[in-house]
Image (cartoon, rainbow, N blue to C red; front, side, top):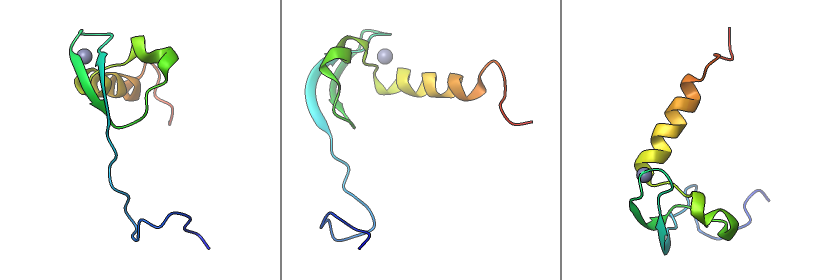
Length: 67
Ligand SMILES: [Zn+2]
């Protein structure tokens, strides 16, 4: 059996975690996250915008991996 949860489909509902955090980069308020934040890293959380920016910067990277 491949499926363990009984969500009853191939897609899982997006669970959002409610809370009260602050973006470590721009200082914006974060009230919900698509993942459960690690309490130890709660001071390093980033808002959606900064997260996306970081992800893109990472993709661009200093050195492209595939060549
Ligand atoms: Zn931010």
